Length: 132
Image 1 (tube, rainbow, N blue to C red):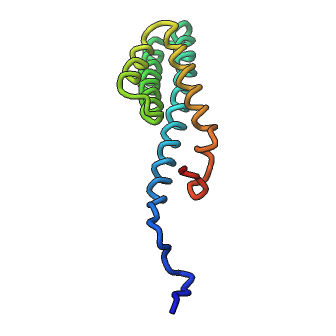
Image 2: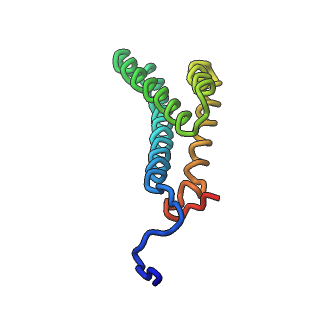
Image 3: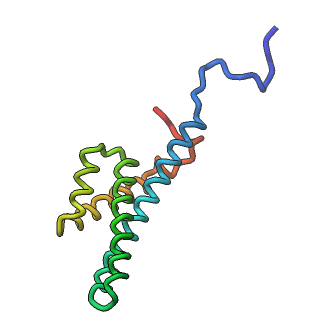
């Protein structure tokens, strides 16, 4: 007699796709958060430069410190989410303090994060991803 139960588990070994989907979703969220921090830090650096010329020094120092913390956090989040490795992450953080190299660091990281967020794999729901 054959088993005709439609609710029977499949005969093949099925991987745990829910855990994998959670991992991809959290990775995508880290990329989004890191990119937002990088863009916000660019705006913060511009605001800090304007405040240095016109406003009180204490406020510019406070905004500059918060902007620097956001920039370093954004760089680390994006580099870790894109799995660039410790050496490139450290190089990007050091490049933040080098004039004109910081513009390149921002440009490369924001571009890589945007490409990752626009890739079809990151937009595909977890139940439709083809692993082959």
